[in-house]
Length: 383
Image 1: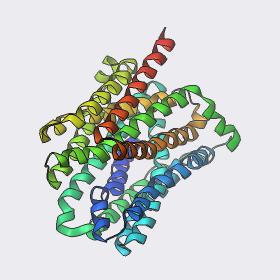
Image 2 (image 1 turned 180 degrees about the vertical axis):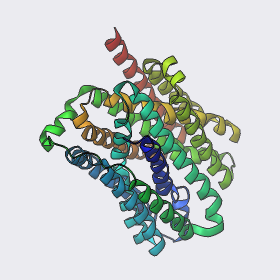
Image 3 (image 1 turned 135 degrees about the horizontal axis):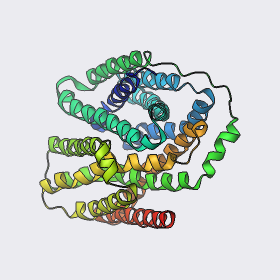
Image 4 (image 1 turned 45 degrees about the horizontal axis):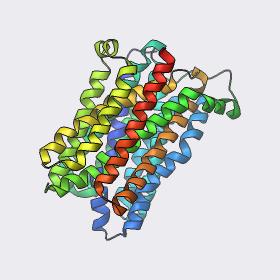
């Protein structure tokens, strides 16, 4: 392996998520400007998650059988860029539906990005490797959010996506410079690969990731924006609060990837602690009385995104054999993707029938259950 391969892959990861998220912050604003119905907008946004749910396990099995993660990464970059092409060529509801379907397909390839990068590292360094992939991921998304906030009002959605085509194409050509993995000699059957889903530790930490991702999608990406709007914040401040979350994510992901942090803080401490802090976030957010309160609280989900996600992923993969790693990653990502769809839906029903604060308390309760579950697990396994 050439020494520059991990760095090239991290650069590709940043370009990939930048391309994927450049249109996201103002997608609903743009679609509303086309006078589309709320139901149609929901379908357009939802197809992104549906594509991932349907493809992640098949992609994982295919990557394990094929062994050529470079191919799957190239497909991911290509479909991410192609999604932007459709948003430029067909800037209407149909075009965005097709584009989001392609973007969902691209995100399903995230499996190979993560597995290939962790393959560059020894087993004892998997936590560090996972943190570095999350760091590159959060940097890409944060830069996309900043770019979208600044450029949308100047150039509009079409030109914004024209830029995404450029970054997608750049990423694709960077992928071509990666080394092609050696061909696999022993190819396991799909049935054999799928036995990995019986791994109890994989199932447990997939469920914890479901809670983490579901709570984040329901709060930072949804109802937190409503809280800050109700406090009188402008659209710019709403966008800035999301950028504050991403900046916190980048900071904590960088911290989590450092050797000193890894040596000093154990996963047994951090996982329950951060679930506890997310519970605090859910309890305090709906009771905020000033915009600056929201900005301070955004630090907590940033910590969850930057530290907790990498820890849960590393723990989920820790007992998985190398030859089944992509299948396990596909299963893990499919499980937490359920949370990203289910929790916002449940929270919406609760908010509509009761109060917005009730939705946050429901999410806080989910964090509390995850906290207790992780404490019980570590008490049993370290006793």
